[in-house]
Length: 433
Image (tube, rainbow, N blue to C red; front, side, top):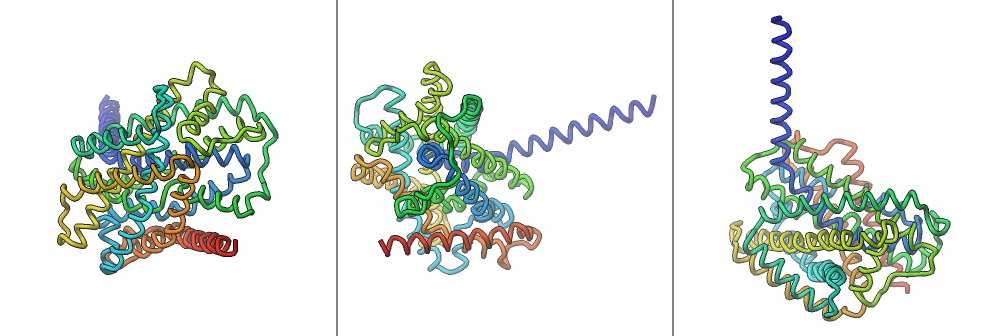
């Protein structure tokens, strides 16, 4: 009898410990999903789908390699913030003020283009969803106002809650469409190799695809800021394991969905004789949503269109917050003795909206060119960020026990070589042609 009671007590204690671990993880959960929400946007919905529709599975290797070799740099953002209690941007400042000015330059340069590309895609989805006939640029202006308003009022807590719901909905709907697409089969034989990739045009698209696969590398700094903000919001300091679990789950989700989106494009459009529109964000996004309805049926259009808009809206919202937060921290380190300012954050929200809108008005008639320009710029600055992140996590002020394991260090070296080599090849091809 006593043994039975002891066993029951032990089981109860184990359940309490499990509940406690789960509760702690829920307090940690958030930064990784913000990362995933940003990644599962243009890079997946647009670029991965285009890759499958244009080349079949010939660029599958590029998606897998980009996800693998960029992993260390992204992981370092979460690792560094947890171990040191400061963001990667603070870490860059340890190299000297020149590093902060360089970070400011390589972040601001593509920032407006990235905001424009993401918001223009979102505007196209909203126009399709509501059957609007107004220009996508006008819809973008409305979205800018909504995003800035939410962040001015709701701040991080509203953003965190919204993203958890949106990511869940998109993940489920995409997996369902993916499975049904596999059961249906491709409309034409698929290829795993295409010589067209190695032409100037093909290689430019390859670089554009990898530039945002799974996301721009400067997102690592934003991820470190979100990690610190989550700790501030909950008052709970997670263990390194908990922080990395939150990130790894989200990172794995982005990699899986990248393959899913490529499959949708490959099975439904490759070899069909149809291609995506280059002239209109509204038309392009309508074609993407039709990939789902081709598989699931016309009845699903409203559901898929709503889900696609939701995820792109969340991407736009997260980018506004991330860039404003990064600029606020950079400004504080350069000009305000490290003191953040809500006024600076708010100002960068507005600056980002104005700059994004001006970019959209210049590229309104060439949608995919806008997307490719944003992704190529991100790829070209990626080697600098990868090298800086690697140096930081192995620096003397990083606690020794928090250093990455040997396999991750070797993968980080491989990623840096990969980014540098492909960047040089791309620059060489552009110069020669």
